[in-house]
Length: 271
Image: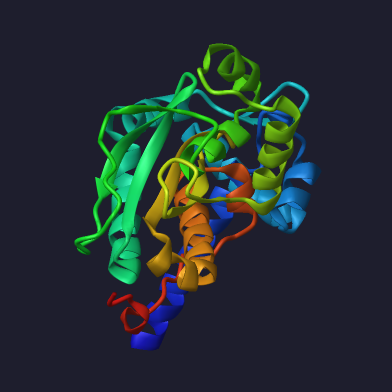
């Protein structure tokens, strides 16, 4: 009996996954699609895609147009409105921050883009007496530090405004080259840019449009940080992918990212 129940559960899970895959075939570039394109994008037999789409049409989540193409219905907007009223990025990111600080015992923070500044909106501080202190709500100019460079790298249209308004001198070409390197790596790593002896790694958090308006950063003194830099990079990249997946980033979802894995507690610094 238990084997039968287990088989039913597996079949139900597979069905739900297929339905969600169908709905995620639509995007800004292709808001409506014919059956054969949907089946191809979802990796499903045409007959299976047709049956699932028929159910979605019947329940009002998908509309079949006059030309026989399919598109998502406005019924989804009601669910989106519910999610928007209850959603806070901190609710998604905080559990991952807890895991990071448990594994690293270094300060971890969540920052958001605000004009030509970044603002910390959540922080968990290291238990070490010597640690980085990050102030909640304090605007800090982009362009320096791991968080500031990360957010600027993914919002490069702000570069000229930053250069025009900043009291600091920027070499525009060198800055653009540095930002391109950040995007290519997928993370920002800085040593002593804002505070001497402080090292940090920051990763992008992409939303459902693939935009980067938030970043996650781990920070600590270089003498503790440097020996573990490679494991911190791996940990933070995994965390960024995990959170972006939860935020609905289309590229991360298509990549079928596995949950982040963090270093075991045996690797924690005791210094």
